[in-house]
Length: 334
Image (cartoon, rainbow, N blue to C red):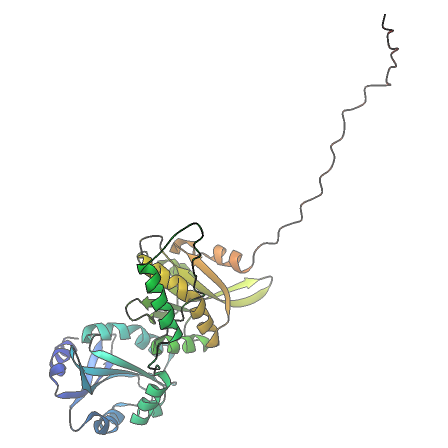
């Protein structure tokens, strides 16, 4: 609402330490805020703990003490307890992108998804940092990307040239992606959509929702590539099935070469990451048009029709008999 937008502009003056935002009547509202008292670690538990209610989800924006080009860095904490309803979880997951956009995503340098009160403490924050920290040396993914960039700059083609191909690039996933996969496995959602941040080279959550199959085609973007997970509920041979389908959508050549390359290289490792989170993928599909995602199409992909064996070729019968054969006497040659 207007009050929250106004405060977003004010709170970046360096005096505000923390603010709490909640969703009320489908509107983001400012609940409370506190000014800087001491350094950020000493303020953390004293100011954050009172904001966390046992069964009421909220967003908490906490100002850290180090600076970035846009000003002070901020931590965005999403407090969605296990006891929250499915609707609340869906609402807070799908609204976070709007909150970041209005606040200014450039100011938010760290994110934390908390489902237990222990995770909202300073100790929980430090544990989160350790769990998700990356090593200083180049990772295998970064080394692969470096080699890939070199090959883009200098490419030598010849008759005997052998091109090196990569088995896949393992892009890291955001906390929101990990949480959404966890929620889908527990039955919270039947549809997830993901995108790759090409600059950050990281996979982010775009949407987490429960949708009907008829709505699915409209979720496929026509201008950018995406990954999708959908639980296809159907019957086959008298059995009720819930099959998870992984879809890689690439709308033709409207995307840049780099975007096509990244999505193509990351799809294999990302689908493996999905299965590591306990979601068994029944079918992997590649499409260029959302209109393809129909019930008939998914059913045929999951349960292909068995082709009947081709019958053996039968020798055609000869012409009907014209009576007894006549014997002719050969004529003598003079």
